[in-house]
Amino acid sequence: MRTLLPSIVLFGMMMAHAGAAMAQEPPETLPIGPYVVDLRGSMPRLKADPVVAAAINLTRALAGEWGQYNINVNAICPGFFPSKMSAGLLDTIGDAIIARAPLKRIGGDEDLMGTVVFLASEASRHITGQYIAVDGGSSAV
Image (cartoon, rainbow, N blue to C red; front, side):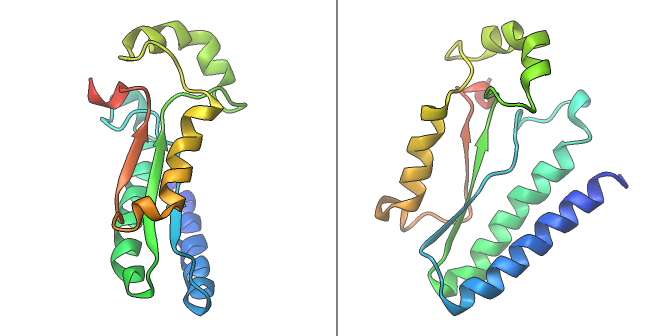
């Protein structure tokens, strides 16, 4: 747990600092993107799951606090996407991840773009405190 606490504290401090600045000149929306691979939780992910849970709960708490400033706070929770962080893992278990995902693929850059554009647009003006899984349906099965 000692290794998780700095991540949670740092994330919280970052959002508190951002909140102080935004209270002066608030944006209309604030998407937060915790690095979520499996929203269901599982034994091999015990180290990351508390950080993800903290990010999602912080998203909900900030939505409640910052709503009065007309700031929407939502989280984007991506599944497996090619990146430096996931390269070795995808090389090892990428085929199994693809086979398990309902859409039978991993995400690409364009898969996140629509969600970001949506959350930054007027179309999401009444959505706050939510997390949106962009994982090809992996969290649904």
